Image 1 (cartoon, rainbow, N blue to C red):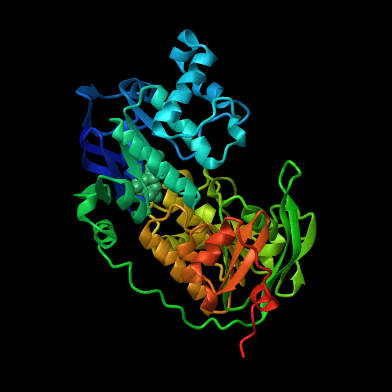
Image 2: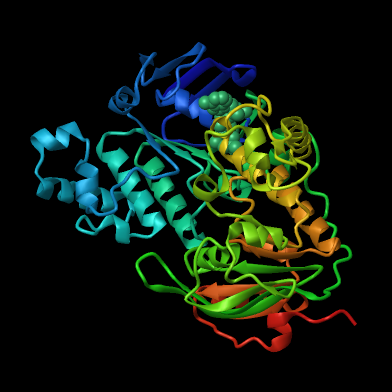
Length: 512
Ligand SMILES: Nc1ncnc2c1ncn2[C@@H]1O[C@H](COP(=O)(O)OP(=O)(O)OP(=O)(O)O)[C@@H](O)[C@H]1O
Ligand SMILES: [Mg+2]
């Protein structure tokens, strides 16, 4: 069905794709794996006509594709679902599907399009209602609108670049189910993900990229997580995690009856109280959208609470702005690196330094020390293994996972007293995920207090001393590490179980 041969693409000194051959047979779900910056998105952008390669040929269904635009890729039968959906929230599913679709505008009436949406929804198990407003759909639903859009435009090959990174576990299994139906109806899918379990579960074949070249290809049934991990990196990332030191000391972060509304005035955080002690990690688990984002924003100073207080090392910082809280020792990894984590057009050096320009080592008297900034940037690029041409390129040119590493490098290297991290490993490859976990535990061992918000329960179980589960803006329960019961946590996440935590669970316990 698809044959890409010798695809090569460089950005200055960065060789993003080095002679990649990729063949996708019909009726196949092909997994595309590789470390952050290994060239996956670049290859897909070449295929979809968003980027023109320096060399290489593409043949799709016996038709050569060269110098093509995304519109021509679509016309040839290739669809791409972007990570940031291109939908209009105020419009219905039908209206979104018709938007920019020439054939629909000229030949089809809304009722006919709605009928086709219903039919496709039935065939592929998309569970879409044509008259529903897109803005009211959960993330997984919006993604299915993008899928139906691509299908009705005739896509025979669908490209999904990290489609599961923001979905809840039930939404992920729903998506994998849809992908299998697409394959069984004769279409092919290219599926990019860092989650090896998902890849093994849904893919027929797997291609692994390393450093812009193909490192291997295998049938999913002939491999396992360990083998795939070894194909991606040539070092071992599965060594057991060391949880040393970190006996719970004094309260560093105290949150008292904190409540907040969303932009439309609806209460999203309903009065939460807890503390995190020195040498402790409190993980906040739960399905995305249950108030975790609001909790993190209010603690970081990005959103005003409707009531309640935040204390850092005993000081009430509720009235302070972002800078005041940083000076009190708070570091913050936001969930959305695009809006609050990075300034895309600033260089890597500037992004690493700009929050710390109010004193030494980057400011000396009235002057900024650019030499010191660049030296610090180079050191952090090396330590966090950020794949980048150099410290002076704009942050927007980094791969998704490397942008996330940039935010982490800035926040973790300030030796914060309190770290509030939201989805810190989203988009990271297994090696980088492991590195972040090790760094968080090192901070814990040296007396830091960490609030670790994650939808990945597996990760929460590794890092946490206590796990709080959020449901509808409140803690459905807080469980101490020695009393973890996965079934109970699952019930709490779905709202089927609420336990009033005792003081020891909410506020931790001092070391004896
Ligand atoms: N527009 C650009 N300008 C400069 N360099 C770029 C550009 N786009 C990509 N690169 C570089 O090409 C390399 C490959 O990036 P790509 O986005 O393809 O990686 P990826 O495999 O998708 O990684 P991730 O898992 O982090 O999404 C990276 O080193 C990146 O910095
Ligand atoms: Mg990518």
